[in-house]
Image 1 (cartoon, rainbow, N blue to C red):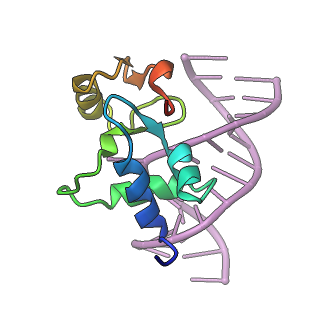
Image 2: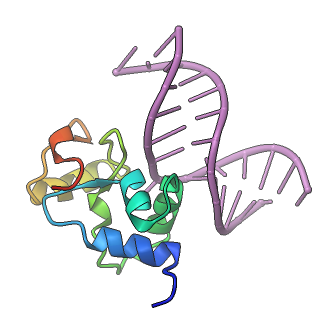
Length: 96
DNA sequence: CAATTGACGGGTG
DNA sequence: GCACCCGCCAATT
């Protein structure tokens, strides 16, 4: 396959995040092969259509802060993710 | 072309 | 915990 675009790589990583787990923008960018492109991940996801099946709600900031706040916190909680004061518990951050 | 903005990250005080 | 700074890249104005 050809060189995956930044978007395709992001979709792949985000879609590969297991349920009950969250990942940071910088982590996604690095796994996608584009370190330091954390901002692009956010831009790409923000341009995603509402019909996307990508678990964008599993993507949080490096601090564990939720970009979408209440809405996303609610979804993460429904998946068993521990959310505290609008942030994800550090224990949930990163991959197994 | 310059400045601004944006689902960011890390460091310093 | 908060304030400030710098780095990184793309799209928009």
